[in-house]
Length: 297
Image (cartoon, rainbow, N blue to C red):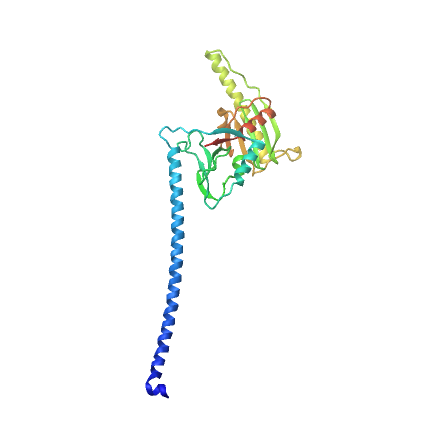
């Protein structure tokens, strides 16, 4: 009653209203402060990431400039031919390399202006420069570059697969094999009677060359027939002949002068220098082909 008489009741009501408004504004202010703090933290994280990326860009630009000098020469710390157990050991080490996201670069390079004397190759490096190597594999992939938390190496670039069939073709020799559990299994081979070099000139020389070319053509036809029988399964059902099937991954190795006859049917062709009887020559050619050269940059 006294509050009403003195007009204090209205004042207390107004005070209560103002306190409610104050509390509401204080809540809004606290929310805005939290949002500003979160925005500041996000901005700081973004600035930190921008600085990290700028440092990486600077480092890579320096490396590109170093590797793209005016003299187009590149000094290697060393080179090594890798095959068999040694190749598997080195690949295991590279496969075990781990870093943060986008810390390891894998790049397939076909342009020899980028890596003279090493291209085509697959280059591997990390943003700290701990690893800096290039591999020249038997199967060179299409150009790409990828940053990840580890190196991206496809075993099919460096090793035969379970569907790989390898043929060695020379002008007078043929050998065929397939891989099982990583080991080369000899399938068949033969040699053809092809005349050797002739030193006489004139008509005799021209006639000799025609005969020799005919013998080589007959030999190559025989090679195609052997491949057809093995790959397509055209052998008689009762012959017991082994076939590879349509999914075979055919690699044809041999002399440059005859490889053109097989490019349309082979997944890959390569010139190799192999001698000996068919089985020994095939083993030598395959060993040479499935060799990866390591360049230490």
